[in-house]
Image (cartoon, rainbow, N blue to C red; front, side, top):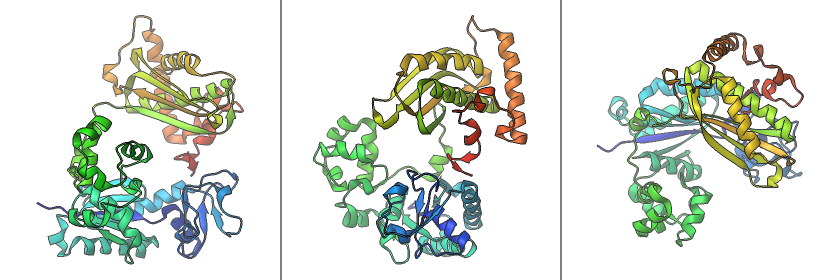
Length: 416
């Protein structure tokens, strides 16, 4: 049975919300969403009006030409989440949750196949019904991609809809080959990034037609198993459905956290931040009743003066003990991080995350101390759940270069 998918994108979402809140038209007003206190801040969103003047969504504030007058709106992530939740509730008026896949805060896929007969409408009519309701209730303009599979639906959204007067794009396999087989740059296509494009160039491939006619053996040699999705996509095919996504369960789980520091940190101060991050992730393990036996650490240096330091190690305990895990991170930090170079990025990860029923301590661990610590961690989780993340902090979070208190007031790394 042929399926019908739509992908709804909330146009310039953060910037559009800020315009709605101010009673402005994002198609006429120059506005960017960014931290107004930092000239080097990234613009998280830009209105369609200022984009027409060449200002991208993900540029830097200082890169905006001086001759352009614009409004700079401080990010309000909790507000954007409220709008996204309201829009999702609009989706649910027309489509059941099992037929919706939320791809990001501003983009969602829907399988509308079961609803064609229900509403006696085609996919385009259903899409228009939904986006008209979104605009009526929120003032947010949406664009739509329509197609018989998730890939063609996304490409219809990303490439076709932006040029359509009604903000809707449609593709099937034949139209895809007719209109987009020779489209360049190839990075405009979903799931093809600059790295993949550079590797394709080594084969003399610059568009989807080049992939379609290339010998599959060459692609598998270059990309391994990932060649399969490139070959399928070049033909306009995608076997994965929304129900497949809903049913997927990863073979292994991990918990990670990263942050880009607002200024250069020295070896000692960056170590404090790493300890805070371990503390935060341990409480996530505790809250979800999980344990881990693999840790990883990444440290990026300011202005890429040297290559980033990275390392991972399987540890002898399968645990969620802050004391045991921090000791392992201390060892890894001292082993891989280069002193005397300014640090700007830190990321940590817990791998092989499993249910705490699989907790296993080595012969050198004090079981009684671990159990006492677990009770303390559970108490901290309860306090923070009830009174907020900053209700109970370790002393290190009050040091000058600590970041946890400030970051606890952010959503997604941005102002709440």
